[in-house]
Image 1 (tube, one colour):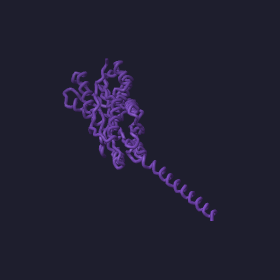
Image 2: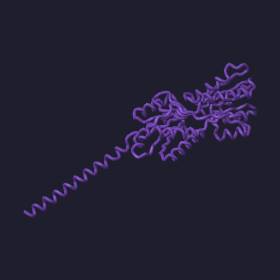
Image 3: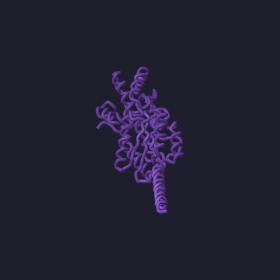
Image 4: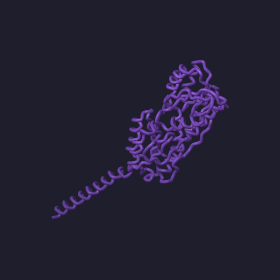
Length: 317
């Protein structure tokens, strides 16, 4: 009888231990699932995770923007995950999908194409992840806030500066950015508001060079072959302006060149008297503001639908 009781007691202890292990295991398996709910990182541990989908890091402007975002994230103790589209829309949409899978708290998008990015914005909307657009807007989907310079104003500043320098007379070339981007559209719109319908002023060529220095060079070379009488060039960004400058110098011509972004290379060219001016868009400030706004959104705070960053016309010191 004693032997039977000992065996029964031992069996009970084994069953209890097994039950305890089973309960512990179940709780452990549930914990990661609970902590990985989309957009809940800020609430769970106080640390905000932000995704930044940038159009291309081959452009110094966006490198500086990213660095500004990283600086703000480090200061706030937030995590920043950067995906580089390399100016490929399909790659950018895939990058945003990866950020959604990682269940970041907020996604910052600098679109390669303002219309095509709509599907990615809508995918984030369905996942309940807030979206903020940076520098370039999205044409569809729900966006909490847009952070950028006033590109129309910048285009007007460039156009008015060119008119002043030309004395209100001359032929102008416009090098356009990537078709479909809000930056190209708005900078061009502001520029034409300043120069169109002015007596003695004519835009003799308008061609896209896709915000790219090499394309700016080749497009300007072709324009110079077909237009011998050019007094000024307005490029939608500094990379194209610097490419155009190479073509102009190679042709031995003196043509006023104005860019947009105030990258280090462009500011140097302005100070050396090679470029006339560039519109300073302050990319580091855009990146910092974007991250600061994302943190507010992740914490449930209200933010403005458009947050402008100041512009400045940079001329030779």
